[in-house]
Length: 171
Image (tube, rainbow, N blue to C red):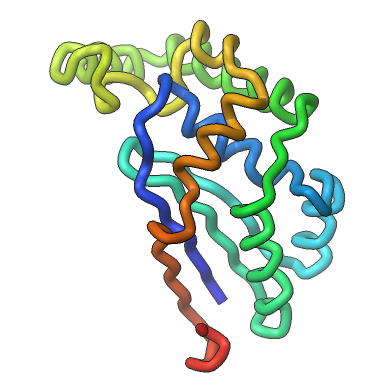
């Protein structure tokens, strides 16, 4: 079963949505990152995220027999993420490496300059979703928690399901 949880993106400092999404699956009030990874991997499932200028996405792919438990786990991740400092630090480093790598690719540099000139540096389309070294370095766990609270609002969530799910299970 393929499940997607889609949220309209909220405007924030460059890179905040990306970093929040990257750390989203790294801990909740009930599970740390290793426990979450174990629950997903033991089911042979895939859990991922995607951040774009206009949306945030959490995706799950799993077998039908694991769907209920993993769907519940996704809801826990979406509502009770706790953004542990060690995981925030780790993902900040990964993101900073990604930003530096973008600067080494000619196409990425050209596309970045095109976006900035077309939209301006303050418009969300004017910069990479990864953010800048300055913004990413400055983010703290509380910044992510605040963004999460505002952006991952279940009232604005769109859920799509594809696969062996009955109408009763969808509800």
